[in-house]
Image (cartoon, rainbow, N blue to C red):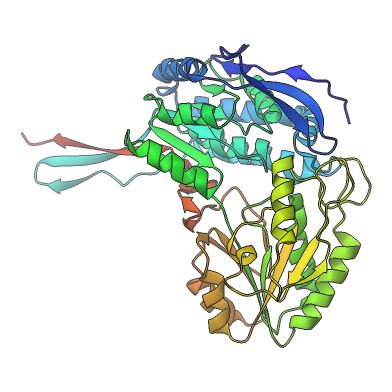
Length: 481
């Protein structure tokens, strides 16, 4: 891995790096070493205004660009990222603590593929056909870019989430101001640098900072849409602030995915699939398979098999360590949160595996399994965002579905069974934006990602995600003599 020295970060505005107007700053840490790798400004209202001014000015021409021009720019960005994939992986690993050897395949290549998908999507925007719905009048539907958008990304998949935001926005003809998480800004700044070679100045701007910077973006009068991936709390704050200016909102928030394992499931296959989907990225995934509901007939066997599999296959360690499945938690606060949740288990719960920080340097946490839990336990109801899998025992399909739906979230879920009819019944009744059957966590660019209830609204990926960055206009023409 290429070594990184501490650097002072700048914003990327109007096609170039510029120093922040703020004198306030904070350190950015490598989660695997706790070493400071950068100093980031806390960008202020002046920085945000400069970024939105650049985006607004750029929209005058970018909004008039053809789909072919936007497609070509995105394809060139994807090609440039592919040529520098190893560099992106180095930066992302330092920023997040993720395992370095698999990062290109696991995340960088997926981000490149998703940019290429939205490049193609730019050419196939659909609308209803023209028609005469009133005598002597023809109606046409126009699908147009919204304008300038503001976007905020989280720290669990910094580069990938930046792609989910900026690619559909500019493919549709919008310009954007993007704010990465305060703990993981580096790969987004590299993305802006690469994209600048192929985009006019001001089309993609990146402003770094903390929550106050994000609040300044939401409060700014220019953006017509605010898109955020983050916590439920953050989503609610954005919704409240955005409502004061009637901004459109796109919210992808938390999750607490139920994983229902019936007694006819292939236990070894289910255990392996669930363990990987639960511990990958240290469980820091809104769709992670960390809330498992197992039929009472196989509960004990399943728990024993899960513990054995996790002990042998779910290792954590430094990014270049051999044989690790996941790296460090992202930051000290997240390590404290996971430790506190597991450290305050109810008396009826059983800690089957793990439950402790690993080592005394870096934010590493052991793969953990907890059984004996009840539906109203906090660890069942609240998102952990760590490598902790909980197991509950159910007795009937109806009970499993009631418990599965009995949380505030509605992002993702999975069902493990050999019974096709049961799988389809569960898919219908599960109140989640995605239902996987006999698998959990794979995503493809062509299919939508987004949830219900407190998991937010709006879709990422797919044509549905693309269309969220457009607006609909009705044009009616008098055609009579």
